[in-house]
Length: 242
Image 1 (cartoon, one colour):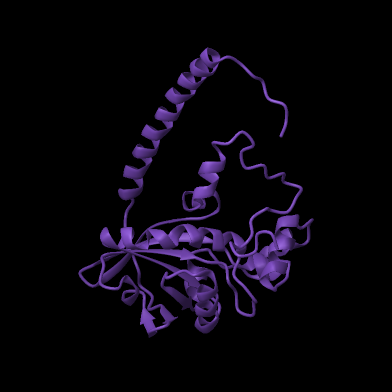
Image 2 (cartoon, helix red, strand yellow):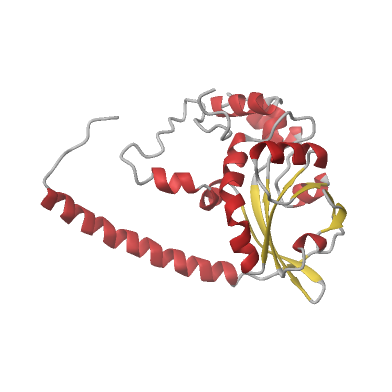
C-alpha cells in the first residue's frame, strides 16, 4: 500500500465531515436519477422470443413467473464454453441472496445466456445459486446489444488485447474473440394486460450496482487496486487460493 498522510483525530473528523457532505449530495443525486429511470417510456416487445429453461420452452412473458416485473442479468456464457464468465459469476453471487426480496416486491430476478440450458444448470449447481437461468436464442441478446459479431469486433481484436480479456477467456475455455462476443448487461421488463414492455437496460459500469464488493472496496484505503496493465483479480468464488 502506498504511503498515506497521517493526522490527528480532529483533522480526520474535519475531513470526514467535508466528505460526508459530498456523499450526501451524491445520495440525493442518486434518488433523482432513480425517479428518472422509473419515468422512462416503456417500449412494447413485438418479437416472440423463445427460451429454454429447466421447466421447458418459455416465452418472455412466461419468464415473469406470475409477477409484473422482470429483471434479467445477461450472463456471459457462450456456446462451447467450459464455464461462465468469472466477473458475471461474481455478480450472480450478489444477486442470488436478493431473489426472495425481489420476489416480495413483485419482481422476478433471473439470468439469461446463450449456452445450452443443461450446461447452465450444471454450472449453477457448482456455484450454489438458486436463480432461474434461461438459455436464450441469440437474437434476444443481439437485439439488446449484448452479442457482437466478429466483424464488429475486428477493430478491437486487431489491437492489443487487454490481459484481463486473455485471462478471462482462458478461464471460460474460449478465445478472446469468443469471450468479447458475449456482452454483459441488465435488462428490466414490465408485464401489463398481457403485453411485455422493456423499461430499462444497462451495461459496462452501469452494472456496478450489482457488484457489492466494489462499493465496499471503495471504502478501504487501497480501494479497488486494479492496475489497467494487469489481469483482473476476480475469480469464481470457489477458485480463490487455487
